Length: 130
Image (cartoon, rainbow, N blue to C red; front, side, top):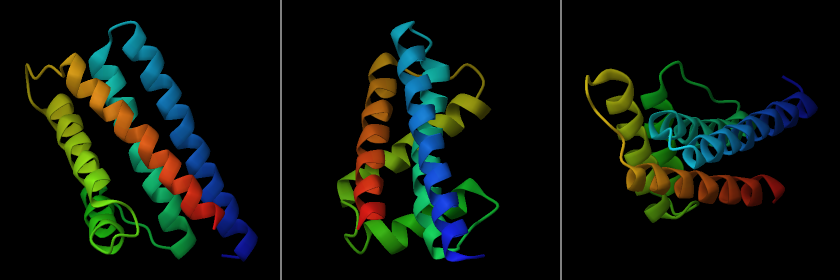
């Protein structure tokens, strides 16, 4: 892939993350916490994938994306470790919400996921701008 294509892919994924965050906030406002939680997770996920695009690294499984990012970015303090905890929580909430019958995302859990998504997008934007 050419350098400009790599940057375009990274920017596209970050824009996707921002759109997912807007959707999460809109769903949160109308008390649709399950949908808002899902969109907040995907905002985080696409933000992470925008960074990985710059490395030309990709994975088929969501868990592999998160594990790699934990190891290469949070553990090495490229991104704050505290943010990594929020990312891992968001992944767990999304998995429970999607796969566990009768699991209900609380308003507070959803709000925390949206805040994590906002922070993640901010840090990714700064990282990409460097």
